[in-house]
Image (tube, rainbow, N blue to C red):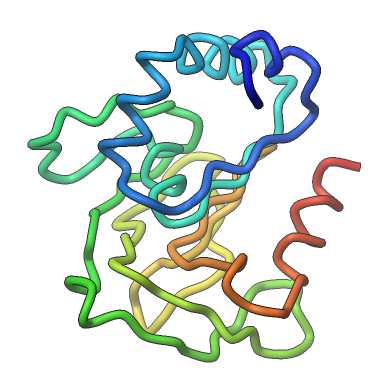
Length: 162
């Protein structure tokens, strides 16, 4: 997207990893925040959020010292950088509901989903930590599927859109 009006022609949006505070501020400054939340409220936009995007899709965030402006799309509470700093980044084979084979996930300063409620469904965990959830038109992931050559997560999202 180059202009905030470009959002009007989209069926789906991927909010990538990065720094959730920076992305939040950019969305607000550009006017995209209002456009995206309008489309969420109209129930006509699919969104996949990876890492920082996962944080922004939440209704609640633990310790929001940076005053991130959340999109309030999913019934979940997240914790930023829950697996540690950059040096604690890792890869791990995970099970994802609906996938027949394990998925090799890349975690970089990853958040975790602390809790879900109402219509939000857990689709993957590491031990007891929630790392992926789905609700209606939204998919939240703690990890970075764009850093692998396994396109099943993207295919899963595109099947949601169909």
